[in-house]
Structures are given as C-alpha cells and as structure tokens.
Length: 160
Image 1 (spheres, rainbow, N blue to C red):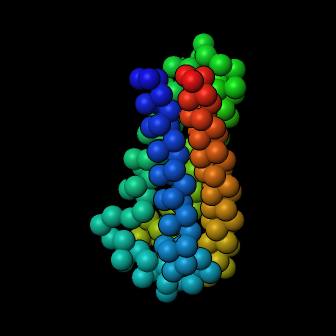
Image 2: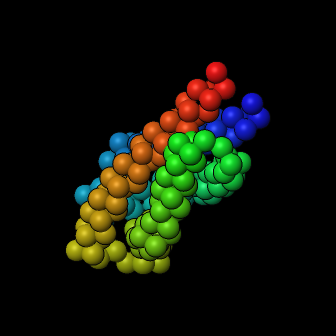
C-alpha cells in the first residue's frame, strides 16, 4: 500500500507537468507564438517578477525524482509495472534534457535577455522552434501520464 502512494504521486506529478504545458500552449504561448517583437516585449514586462518557468522549475525536478524513486521501489515487482515505470522514467529524463539543451537557450534570448536587442528574423525563427518543441513536450507528457496511469492500474490488479 505505501508503495502505491509513490505511484499515485508519480501520476499526480505527471498530470501536473502535462497540464502545465497545455496551459502554457493555449494561454501563455498564444501571446507571442508568432515572434512579434512588440508582443514579446509586452510578455517580458508582464512576467517581470515571475514567469511560468517558476512552476516548471519545481515540477520538472520533482517529476524526475518521484519517477526514479517509484522505479527503484518497484524494481523487484511485476515486470509490466517495471516496464511502465522505466518508460515513464526515460521519457521524464528525456524531457528534462530536452528542456535544458533546447528550450533554455531559446528562453534566454526570447524571454530573459533584457539586455538583448531582439532581431526580427531570429526572433520569429526561435519562436517557431519553441512552438514546435512544445508540441513534442506535450506529446511526451501525455505518454508519461499514460505510462504512470498504467503502472498504477497494474499495481491494483496485483493486489486483488
């Protein structure tokens, strides 16, 4: 029963990650996704003290950690549960690395670089790349939710 709490946490963090990106995609990103410099400057001024990254700086490491703990806790259990948890862990690590090496450099230019003079062509290209990458993160998040839900379901079918 206590190990199932880890699976519930794994599922909750996965859903939180996915819903955060869906909110970002449909609400936040719609304000700047075409790379309009004026809209990006408005975005920067609106998110002067905090930005959506604050949420993700908490949820992403927490998701990775709980995924690893869940995987280790169930290492000697049913192979189907281990498979689902390993898929979840690999996808979570991949998303973390994708964010670190793909999104953070774009974020530094588009959102955080207050001293940077935005160039129209480069800004439009980076905004387009950011939107494309966000599509992949949403797909990855959806797959993580499926894997964590399946592992949770399998844990209850083993109890019965």
